[in-house]
Image (cartoon, rainbow, N blue to C red):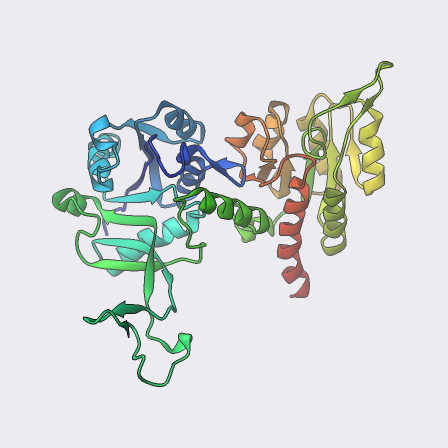
Length: 397
C-alpha cells in the first residue's frame, strides 16, 4: 500500500469585517490561528503545517506556534475569493517541500475546538473508505422545516402530518461543521473542488461553533474556560504522577508590592488553593512548588497549602533531578506549570507542560496546555479541576 503523506493548509487572511483581527483573537489564552496550528502539529498524520496569509502579524503568530508561512497574493485574499483559490495557490509550495504528497488537510481556524485526534480521524476516513475526500460533521437530530408553494411550513426530514416522532428516532443526519476537510491532493488539483469525488463523513464531538461574530467569540471563550477543551488527551493526563509548579506568575499574578522598607507581598487565589486541596483529596499526584525566589512568602504559601517546596534555587533542572530520584519518579511522569523563560529548561524535560494564559510568549508557544486563566487568577484551579475529573474514574475502577 502506498505511503500516505499529508500536509495541513490553514487559510488566515488579515481582513475580517465582522470581527476585526479575528484570526488573532484569543480563546482560552491562545489565538485562533495558534489553536489551529497547534492541533495540526499535534496530529500524528500530518507531515507539515502551512498557514497561507496576507497579514504580517498572522504570519508571525503562525510561525511562533510552529507553522510554515505561505504569502498569499492580494487578489485571492479579499472578501470574494474562495477558499479553494487559496488552497490551490498553496499546493505548489507544499509539493516543493513534500514531493510524495498524497493528501491535504484544510483547517478553518474559525473553528476553535479542532483536536489532533479529529484531524487524524478525518484523514483515516478518506483512506479507509477509499474516498476522494472527507469532512468533519456533527450528528444532528433537528426537525427541519421548509416552505411549500403557498409559503406554509412543511417538514423536510419528517412527515409533520403524522404522529410526532422522538428526535432520536429520526434517520441519522449530519451537519457540516466547517472545521476539517481532507482531500486526495491529485484529485483536488484536477477539479479545484474540496468535494472532488466520493465523500466520507467523519463525525466529531467538538462543539459545533464557528467564530463569525463577537458573540461567538465570547461563547467560545466561556466554553474554553469551563471545559477541558485544549487540554492534553485524557490518557496522557492520566499518566501524571507529579505536578510541579513555579510560584510567581503561576500561584500569583506575577506582581509584587514592595513597601518603603523593602518588604514584599503578593496576592494568591483561594480558588487555586481549593483546587490543589481537591486534587490531593482525589488523587495520589505529588505536588511541588519550585522557585528561584528567596522570599519567605513562597515558604509560607506552600506551608498553608501543605505542599512540598524547593525555594531559592537557580538550577531548577538539577533540583528536580534530585527530587524525582527521591520520589521514585521520572521526568515523563511530570506535569510542569511555568510562566516565563526561566522555566524553559525544566519544561523541555517534563512529560507534559502547562502555562497560564498570560505567560511569556515563548512559553505559550511551546506549552502542551495553555490554561484559560491568568496566573494567580484561576489557572491552577482549572488545571486541578480537569485532573480531578480524570483521576476520579481511575479511582472508581
